[in-house]
Length: 218
Image (cartoon, rainbow, N blue to C red; front, side):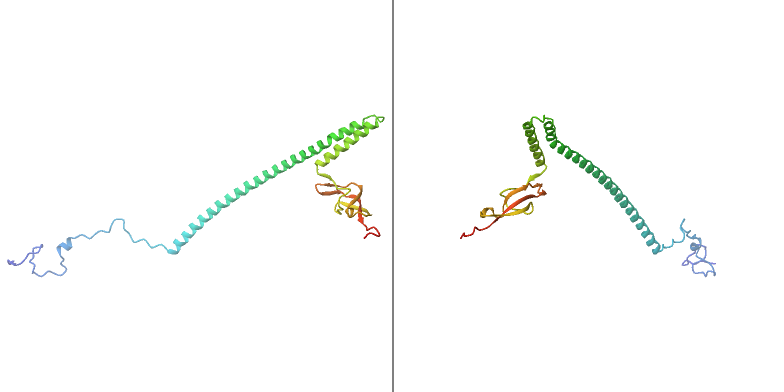
């Protein structure tokens, strides 16, 4: 077949205008190798279930909160144990101090009465023939006893001339008086009364005056 000047020749040697048999392919397309599938590439990974992800996150959060609660519980338990130990130690210190105070108070009381008792013992050892010395010694001992009791809060209830006070006085009798100044006042003390730090130890037994107008007085 003659090829004209204007005819182009295909790569396979046939003119461009010549008809191609059926099934013939473009040589360039036929020679182009198929693109191989990328190495290692496979089917796309399936998308994870959102509910499963949510459950996993909730479980992780719950575990974290549980561990935090356990830590707080251990801290509270430790603090409570330390507080119990401190309270026990404090109680023991207070009991020890109370015991010391009680022993010191007992010592002070015995010491307050020790001298009067020793003087009483010496007075009683005096010869019965020396009555003036014996009486003087007993009087001194009485004074010392009253001083010692006074340091402990003992006080004598007001007597003659004091206004009658039913909280510390016990009226044995009422005696008429002509002097208005003696009305309602103690005239006689039969038994001396005593108080300890304001509390009545023994009420004073007294006779009180009652003002009465003299007949014929304007």
